[in-house]
Amino acid sequence: MENYAKVILYTYSKMEEMDADLKEHIRFKAFTSYDYRRSTEAIAEYIAEQVISRRTLCELKDKIQKALSSLSSEEQLLLELRYFGGLEKVVHTVRGCLRRSDEPTVREKKVCERLSLKRIWSERSYFRKQKALLEKIEKKLQSVGLSETLFWEKY
Image 1 (cartoon, rainbow, N blue to C red):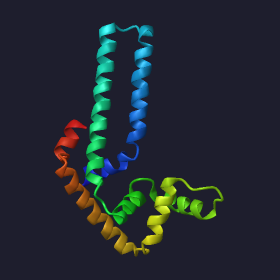
Image 2 (image 1 turned 135 degrees about the vertical axis):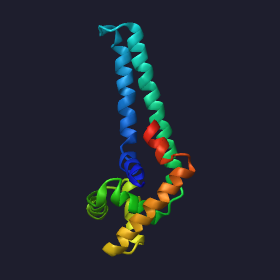
Image 3 (image 1 turned 120 degrees about the vertical axis):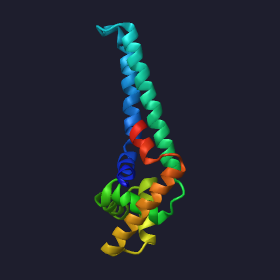
Image 4 (image 1 turned 180 degrees about the vertical axis):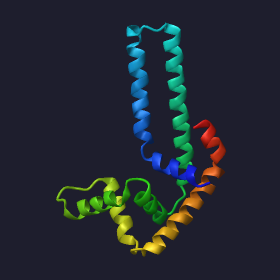
């Protein structure tokens, strides 16, 4: 039941990159369509399918953003730790904030602020919080119209 929520969360951080790649692919295909040995109609159908795929990806991303928008800072930190880059990335970010002489990025500042405000969790507490957060996110996804059945059928 919660597998689809995990799939969504693990791929969410890559959706911007996927969208940019798909957009570039569509553009490239359209500009170089004269060089293919297939019919113009077949190329046009392929490009149209890719445009629909990109629109579907954007729709999915918007639904996920809507579902995640009301999470607390602690829940956002838990997502960052588990699904959006892992602990190593967060630790590297914190070290960068503490050791660098130049100004940290906005994202780095946010992560550092969130970490400094939160107490360290025990391992057991961390996994309990992650489990509860996954259940909460699954309910939020369903509330924005992204059920497990719809996800596997459409996306």
